[in-house]
Image (cartoon, rainbow, N blue to C red; front, side, top):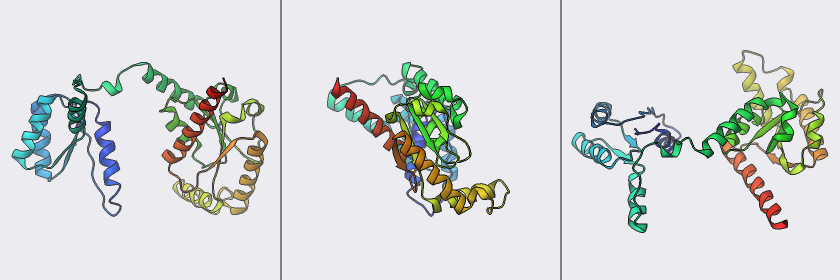
Amino acid sequence: MSDSIGETAESVVKATTSQFVDQEFDVFRVPYVKSKEQVDKVMAEAAAEKAMVCYTIVLPELRQHLADKAMELDVKVVDVLGPMLRVIEGNWGLLPKNQAGLVHALDHEYFKRVEAVEFAVKYDDGKNPMGLAKADVVLIGVSRTSKTPLSMYLANKQIKVANVPLVPEINPPAELFKVPPKRIIGLLIDPFKLNSIRSARLKTMGLSDKAAYADMGRINEELEYAQAIMRRVHCKIINVSNRAIEETAGLILDYIQGNEHHLNDTK
């Protein structure tokens, strides 16, 4: 439950429930709760379903009303923001604005993020090689190495990303070889892991997993070709096998920041 969009509370719930791998949880987001009546309705439903409520509400009176209602109805609740707000107030004597939705305000950072997302969509999958020169990062790799999900994830970190698929039968665009090596990231993957991913992909499309797309010989050929291109452009290489998108993105962000620090040190 939240007096804004509820994204923070939902993220906390999903991060927590992911630790209970053998149990399924139903998660419902209730955004834009602005009145005591709305709180009462949600809490009554939670009591009837014997549910737990995780909330991010900044208005003190509404937060207190929710806590009181929880005690009245014997509903277990988790206040995500309240404890941290109180600690900051107590430690430094600062007063919060108590205004919902500030983290999502339409500020400069927001528009930079939107611009990066639009960039990632426009220059996804090698659609327009002209975008490579404008990109903060260029991802290269064979099909199913998470180029597109990584591009979108990094875009939400305000990084402009273009990506280029590497296929033996198609020469990479000439523009790729003009991009500084420090702005290119090569994505590699274990061939058996790639075989598993591609086979599953074919099945979801109603196709046979015996197709050339998932053939081990073809996969090894593609990976060897990809490595040859990566050596040619002298780029950073990351193995994405058994890595979550967030972990790979973290490695890329660390690499970018390392390059920035190096440039600053040499000035």
